[in-house]
Length: 173
Image (cartoon, rainbow, N blue to C red; front, side, top):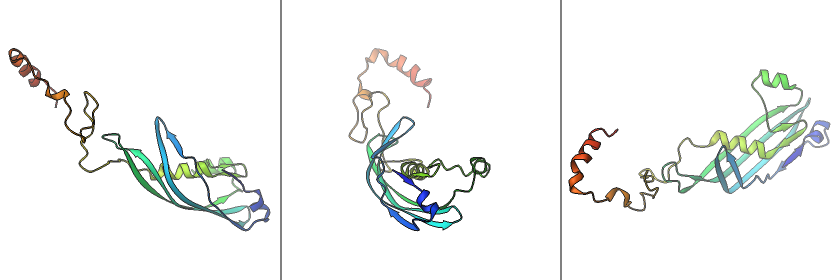
């Protein structure tokens, strides 16, 4: 959703609230996250001298795959963003002050980019479905939380036991 900020800069609108509706899924490199639920409120207010107050509050609930077993896990991310947008600054000044605002394009505010950035900042480093998640088998790919897989239970020929001992001796831990 693009919001035209020109009306705020002209003084036509002093304050306005929006209920942004972000995209239901977004990608980060090769991972795609689905947004299950959200409740966001964006408030813009004119502060004079080409400055606009921007406040975004609420939450999003994402379906994120578990880092061990890849089962989807619901994860709630609270968003609290409060910033003054200074439209007097040039692009060079913003870069110099490390204040690049990729959600601003000329006099338009891209709410999807703003929400996406806030989600990226707030994503947890590790997502687990449970603290004792066993993950997946590295040979067959079956989920070890559902039970023991059969690939590690193969019966070996007893005549090959000495060769198996040699392999186990040089096996990396």
